[in-house]
Length: 584
Ligand SMILES: [Zn+2]
Image (tube, rainbow, N blue to C red; front, side, top):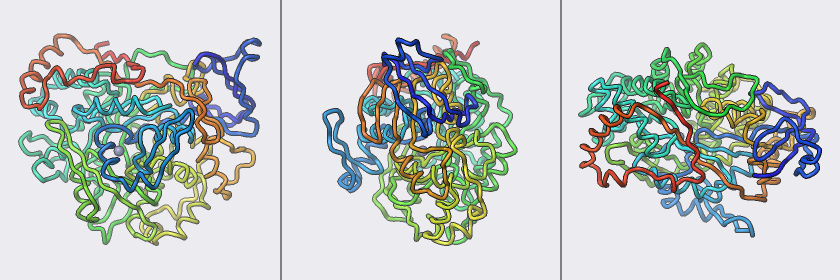
């Protein structure tokens, strides 16, 4: 990362610094954005001529499934996914294979080729944290971190039942340190526990088996603990009843629970210079809104319920969502929501995998193909784009496919182009089932997002929402030297020429990571070091001691010894803890 880099004469799109297409030079020294370079430094700098091109901060994916036991199970149960897509080794890079669930090397190269430099794994089961870190460590070129799955954890459900929020907070803090994870993930709160008994939960006030805890109590409890601890990101919620007709109602009601929970982000970090306040202001980050937005009562009468939820979000300031778009084609659905995947299995009869992670969580996996000829799949395509286009303020939205659930991340260029080009949407409407138009509002939407909006949805806002804007998603002085150059001339941008946009987004002209040029026109040209972020949360020693006595007592029910539970730092690539001080 040593040395200097200059990216000259590009059109800069840097929303955290309110720079909208100005022609500027970007300088990087020792891996960080610098105000200027000396004459000598400039003389020795690597220079990129970005004249006539679009320059943005490196892409940030705040929700993707890229590492761990579940992802790897997806790889092993799908040989057909691997012989269809493979990559030859070069003198620099490894070989790789896999389309929807690529091998770790291939996924690092593929993200980098598109201009992404930072990716967060959306679901780390505590017991599988070591495996998750091993795969993140082996994934080249990406700075990474993972969210710990806590919505059905035995310890937390017991503490919530007993009203012991002090110990619950101490437990979450200890779990983050122990497993080197970054934020709180909450999947089908209280419902996955019922799945252990072949059941699910369908309303927010239904108590689960044995623990007698409701989804409302879990969401409220985790949201309060999150802010009490001062976590970098809000709770990351995968709402109940996912993927069922009518589920939009419980999704909207779930979003109301953390309304009024006061946000408190309390991290000891060096903040890059930004013109906007880069700290987070939301108390809930809802994931894959599309999958949680079906209206209707059956698959026969289902329709989009997205507008009802986006109307709510447009009037509130405590919610950020990612979309979970479904860009047609092959996917592998994989989630900690076991019952949701079982229901898909009964619909499709595809091969299916299910896991119960002892006292912590569960998961399910199933291959899936989204077809343009299928009415529901076509509707889902439209709903995913509604999630991004019906929310007025782009700072409340993040673009994802919940990779590989809605489709692999390599389909991001399609999604980016659909939200920027009404002509491309019309083209797809003409090819897919009429439910896409008849049962959603998308056909009446003529909004086309700008390059500035796109930079918010794919860089600035994912970074801000998860508390990484102190160094990611920005080109301010002191930010990481992560930059994407797209071969798009904003002066000649024509949204009707969507083929040109697709081409430009598929292969970034340059991807720069920590000041190093890592990819040129999709070709990997260097492999600098990467890092793993996690939250080192500090609570009073006394609290931790009391809580640990409970944990050790219950460890006799675990299949491994207490001493083997933690993930040591050696499992991480360049471990980069973020100090979180709950007591201050
Ligand atoms: Zn997900």
